[in-house]
Image (cartoon, rainbow, N blue to C red):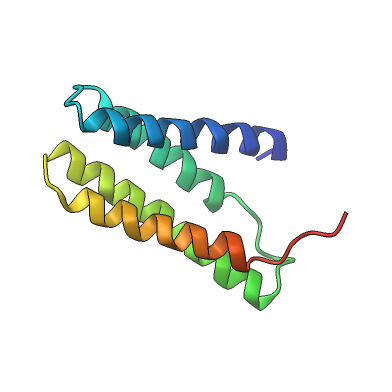
Amino acid sequence: MNQKVRTFLFNISGLLILAGAILYFIHWIAAPYLFAIGAAGYTVCYLTISVKEMDFRSRRLHRFNVISGILMVFASGFMFKDRTEWILCLTIAAILQVYTAFVSPKSKQ
């Protein structure tokens, strides 16, 4: 997948996840669908990244991102069933994302 397309999909997916999570609390019928599409796009973005040239630490952090995407997909499934476990899945995914964002090596430009 092209890097520009991946970046665009990642940004749109993040907005859909945020909108779905917020709109779920006001009981909007399409909120789980928005969240599910965003979670799927987010997971696809991380699953299509090549890990061949990554070092061990970067691969481990990449696995955390993939796990957080899968947790968001599970969260959307819980949303469709009107269960509150989606909040726990989303919280764990967010913690993994914050950890990855602060620990990942910064690229030198």
